Image (spheres, rainbow, N blue to C red):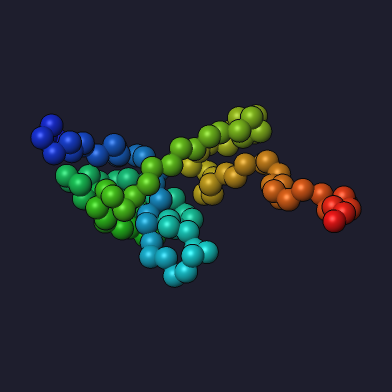
Length: 109
């Protein structure tokens, strides 16, 4: 039960939520969280048990990150369910460099 004195809040995870599990970073290029999602199966206070096929982990709720699964228009047309897809969708935006074009001549001095 959260108290107002220490501004604590209860966990925002419920059974059935899809989460990513925090992992140790080996270097600055690795992600904070593992790429494969788990499903929350048990909750006991701040101790959360999450499962995926053939694997189960129990962690404090601070080591889990809830993910939202957005169903695309194509998935709706083909009737694919959320659980059928075991990946996290990425944006289709193109990444452009922040550099200006270098075709301009350097300034005269």
